[in-house]
Image (cartoon, rainbow, N blue to C red; front, side, top):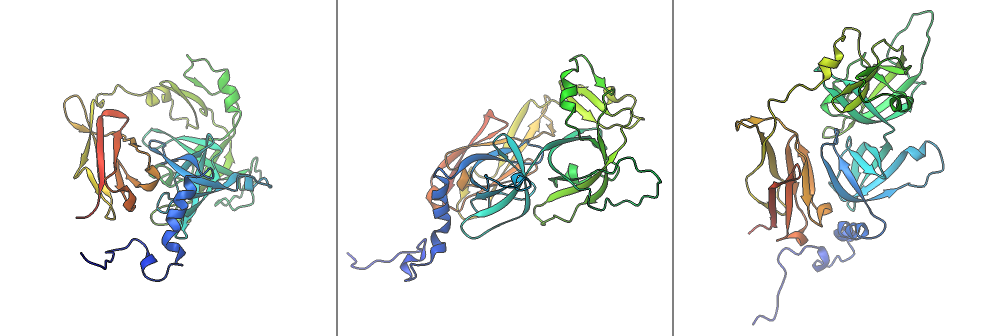
Length: 362
C-alpha cells in the first residue's frame, strides 16, 4: 500500500501553501450568508412578467432617511444571477434593475429602483402592452423639442425608466399615455357592462425624447423616455377588452376601437406543448444546456406560444438560469450538486415534467 498520496485537481489552494487566499472561499461564504436570516425570498422577472423565478437575495438600504433614497435598494445575489432591465418582485412591489450589474468575486450587486406606475399603451400592431415603470419628475431637463408657441398651457415633464425589451424600445416620439392616480377612483364607478368611458378628466403625456442606447450594456440594460404633459383627446379614457379594463390614449381615427381591441376567436388554440432538448443531463462546469418550448394546435401544427418555466428543487439559487425567447438555458458550476436532480415544468403542466440530472465530466 502506498505511503504517500496527493490530490488531483484540488478545489481550492489549501494544498498550495497559500491558505490565506480568501477569494477561494468567497462564493461559498456568500452561499452561507444566503442560508442565514439576512437573506429573503424574492422573484426575478422578465419584462412582461411571463417568467418569474424565485431566488434568494440580500436586500440592503431598506431603512432610508431621505425621500429620494426611499426609491432605491441594493440587491446582493450569487454571481451570474441577474441583469439590468429585469424586475425584482419584493414585498408586493416591482423594482427595476438599473445600472450595470457587476461582482466582487464574492457576490454581485444590483441597484433597484421602485416601479411606481404600470404604463399602458397600444402598439403599432394593435396589441395592448403593460410595463411596470419607474417615473420621476424631469421638469428641469430638455424635452427634446423646440417650441415657438406664444402660450404653453402645461409643461410638466416626467422621466420614465422601463425594461429595454422590444416593445419598450419601439416606442416612438408622439406615443401618448394616461398617467393619473385618479383613474383608480374613476374605475370604481364604472359598471361591468360598460365597454368604454371617455368622460373622465385624466392627465396625459406624450413621448418627446427617447434614449435607446444611453443605458445599453450590450447584454443588458434599461430604457428611458422623457414625456411631456399633453392635452387630453376625446378618445382618451377607459376601455374594456375581454375581462380586463385599460386606460388608453387613442387617436380620433380609431372610432371602432372596441371591435378592434376585442379578442378575436382563437383558431390557433394551444392544445399541446412539449420540451425539446438534446440531453436530460447538465454537465457541471460546461456551457449551458438549452430546453426549448414548442406548442401545437388541434391539428398538430406548430404554433406560437408563451413559455412559463418552473424549476422545482431546493438549490435553485445555485443554478445559473437565463431565458432566450421560449428557451431556458441552465448551467451549473457547483461541484456539490453532482448527481443531484431537479424537475423542470413548462407552463405548470404536469405532462411536460422533465427530470434533469447534474453530472460531472468522465
